[in-house]
Amino acid sequence: RVHRPMASLPAAKADRVLIEDDCDLSFQTNGTFCYPLYEGGLAKMWAGGRSNFGVCGERGRFVFDVRIVRHLPVSADSASAASKDTTHLCRVGWSVLGTPTHNLGESKHSWGFGGTARKSHAGKFESYGETYREGDVVSCAIDLGMRHLLFAKNGVSLGCAYAIDPAEIDTEQGLFPHLLLKNVQVEVAFDVRLSEAFPGFSPVQQAVADGAATPRRAPVSDPELLMLIGLPASGKTTWAEKHLKENPNKEYYVLSTNAILERMKVAGLLRTGNYAERFEQLMPEASAVLEKLLEIAPTRRRHYLWDQTNVYPSARRRKLTRFDGFVKTAVCFVCTAQTLEERARKRESLEGKRVPEEAVKAMAANFYLPKPKGSDGFVEVRFEGELHGGGAELQVEADRVAAGMWLARQRKRKAETEPADGPPTAPTGAAHATSQMAGYDAWGSYLTAGGVGAFAGMLPGMGGLPAMRGYEALGAAAAGGVGWGMGAAPALGIAAAGGGVGWGMEAAPAYPPSAIGAAGVEASCCQPLWTPQPAWGPHGPPARGP
Image (cartoon, rainbow, N blue to C red; front, side, top):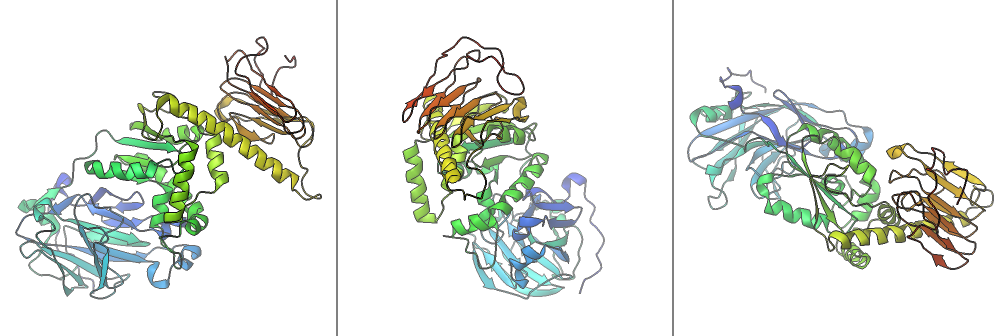
């Protein structure tokens, strides 16, 4: 039974109790109405929010009401991924500042009551009360003197759910109203009553007038963005967890596909010890969710920790432009290849986590470290991994070369195993590739069948891939050879038949270097072998060669 609201309590806007910025990015508010985003993979996730004022002290009895307005229309795919009773859910309760907003009742200092008739605290779920659903009103009450938490459904008390242990929490630090939603819209009332439950209890808004309320921390004036940069298993997440524990007052919001994967709940898909299957089934949705959160994040002034590989410089710059007004710091993680492999094997044996090798090689082939106060807009570039400074730069360059060679060999093998009636094993003649990425062109050339041309900063090419470093490069290969053009200046790599590898490496911008590898040998060059040439045009090198 839904009761007519009582008269509102007057409150200045600055003193009004509401859910404002202490919430998940996917948690939305519109006045007194709250709801989570529910498109795609977001329908598999909870979203939580906490009020800007909490109640505190040793005296006082306060209550807030939540009405379940409607179930949100999720896609058939999202609905089938959950059982009928877990597609639309709501959990209400109390928590202290600093506890995660997305897991009410699952952390130490939070207490919740869910629509499946279960209460929860510190991750322990127990039967309590009755189920509630669309149209019901749930009341959440606290008796500070008795240290009791109570709940009611449609005006009928369900009894005391928890008696808070004085040794566990000091009520002087404040307990804050908290909502956790999954595909439902609710109306929350802090200053009026939607129910007649708990007579003698005052709306939470009254605590502000009585001096029994404590505000959350002041709004962030200089929001920070910590972008972690490094290959898988380089130590990013381990460092992030440590940094979060050491800086609780920052209340960093973590942007990470792994964090999203862990929060997605799908019937029949284990959440622990099952990383490979979850990665395969859910990563496309998790990536789409992260993209959505990255659109929202710059609009909310808070501190962010972005835990991704973030090795592609063009994508890095594109995404960072959204965070205008943020203090941006790059935290780089570089390890030796041996360390990365050892950590990857250990993580796979302990957690079942293993990123596909080809994905790791593709990242390594395109990994460029940022520069302080460079085009990325970082005010600082820090190194927290195994290697720092110049050693890290050399390792990244070496990994990029090795990964490029590995990818070229893989492409060559795939081309050789194509069926006779399938695509040709390699194009013949010249193939020109033009890209507007970074404003410059890429050039790829195949001299005879079976050759592999690579260009654009060690990115193996098939005549149609874009330049990634913003400069032109040429890779050419004869049958069975691999040619590389790389570096910050136009470069040429030529390989002869029979497995020769030619490297054209970075030199002075005016001197395109070259290298020629004979059959079965590797040659490299870091110095110009010819006189300066005219600048390359928009469609490849000039007509006059070296």
